[in-house]
Amino acid sequence: MPIQIIRQDITRVRCDAIVNTSNESLIPGGGVDLAIHTAAGPKLLSACEKLNGCELGQAKITPAFYLPCKYVIHTVGPVWQGGGSGERALLESCYTKSLQLAKKYRCKTVAFPLISSGVYGYPKDRVLDVAMRCIGEFLEDHEMTVYIVIYDRASFALSEKLTSDIVSCIDDRYVEEHDEFFPRISRRPRFEAAKNFRRPMEEESKCKSRAESDFCRIPDTAPAPAFPSLSLEEMLGQIDESFSEMLLRKIDESGMKDSECYKKANIDRKLFSKIRSDKHYKPSKPTVLAFAVALELPLDETKDMLMKAGFALSRSNKFDIIIEFFIEHGKYDMYEINETLFAFDQPLLGA
Image 1 (cartoon, rainbow, N blue to C red):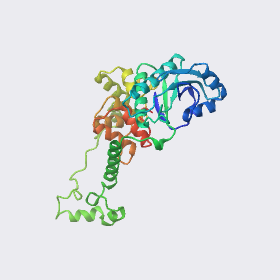
Image 2 (image 1 turned 135 degrees about the vertical axis):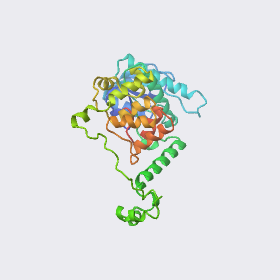
Image 3 (image 1 turned 90 degrees about the horizontal axis):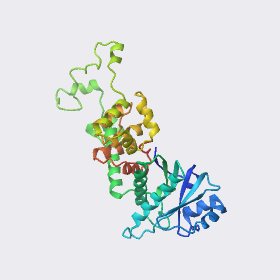
Image 4 (image 1 turned 60 degrees about the vertical axis):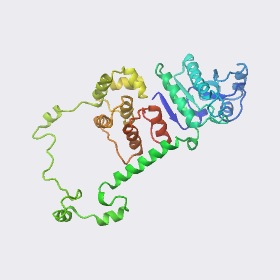
């Protein structure tokens, strides 16, 4: 997956380069900067002293010394002053310049902290949004895996309205899922519902006097079998299109190039090549949903694509409810969806 949000100590991430949020002198201060210098050893300070500082919004590179990576990219982020002093443009420059430097040094994997989110006071949710979008735009034209490293999940928060909407949606749909077998007494304690539940034969005898009741309604005939009077060979001959076949068909119908679709889905090229070359490829559920979001499929087509891969959306699963919430509301912003999944401790799309 090209962009991954992980909870980790950045000094322990194994990759080609990690990004250090530094100051203009490149002399270690506190927070992430001090942690990286401590883990790298005194040679990192000596290397930084030879760089003659770094301007705000720019980036410079040194060896990583004792860190489990090759390079440290040092960038100077803005101090938060309320958002009206050009902070966002400077923060975007930090991410872009660092990525360009990583590419120049042929890095295939890079780990970023939330730049300026510590003592510089930039709100973490806003930094994450800038990071996701800058990195996403860069990866549209470059092959690289980028980790966004968040040390303290508890300090990360979504907007109050989105959080409220998601929590409400999860609550409502859990209730629907768990109470759907008892429609007349939903939200009562489960033991009370069980006490009032009658066996089907007993309930059928009551139906004559209240035939309009949904609870009592009994079908006159059983549904017809899916393959009436067919042999096994004939049934197998009517097999539906696979996930891979449906995906490729939908990409063609959308007018997208393959590369546009898999990058928008946060899927790497190697995985997409496997899917394209094997019509029986079995993807993970996050992969299927990543493509559904990238193609902006409506809910019914999303469910169809999931079914072809052997999955379904469940209202007993927070991950599924969050995805369904965004699709129902016509919100196909991969960055916002993954930020929300991360905030609710769920797997990200594209994994």
